[in-house]
Image (cartoon, rainbow, N blue to C red; front, side):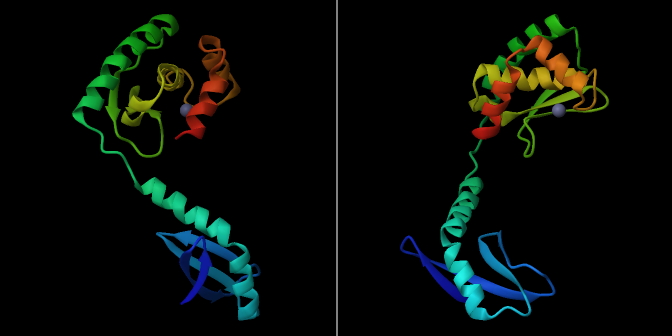
Length: 176
Ligand SMILES: [Zn+2]
């Protein structure tokens, strides 16, 4: 085990020699693993890791940040449910796209999903987002009732009902 110092913190790392061509650093579950080609000198690897100290430190902190997940309560659920009702009524009325069921779940990898049997799932985490952002997610999923893909036609349909959707989409991506 080896150590680098950064920001007054000691960061441990391990070197793993492999049959690879390039040196790279992998950060997983708070472990810093340096994968190195067999022919590389240890000194060269250590220098490389030291040069990357800031990046490693940032990545480790990001990982920590991601692990702090808010605990959502029944109250959040109800709050989003009320908002969703209004938004869905409005959007279903204007688009005439009608889902089979809409439900709220604390899902991990998407803001919303739409299944082949026309069930829409909306992420509970949206409770902390602005109304327009929730509206965008609902509209996006409603449009999947017509196009089960992200084709040009799909995006044209989204744009038809929300001309500034690109802006809102960007917001959702950046403060996730
Ligand atoms: Zn989609």
